[in-house]
Image (tube, rainbow, N blue to C red; front, side):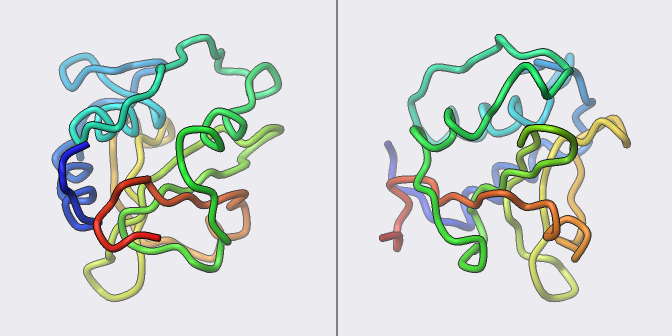
Length: 146
């Protein structure tokens, strides 16, 4: 993996803002879902893993957490920093991911492909999102990490 820091990660993630939402999408032209955004960023920084497209829109049939636990470094939810990855439980199983950014008005933001707004967006990491945060992760090999 190339030498990269936390701000490089969010800079790359922000390049995808506005890309349309598409379930299982992995393309800036046709769209990405939340895992697709993470996949594109991971590919750009040289993080190698096997992308799993065997998931449905029904969160009961797919649990993302065991996959992320093997690729990323689990951390305490209270220790999130810019450039980390967050996993949320919106419904039944944890199935939504976002990359932590620095919010322009202070605090943290989240960069994610969000079906409700049909595109990749960045907004403040609010108490509502923190309440459904299941796990946080560091991306391995990032400069200044553990």
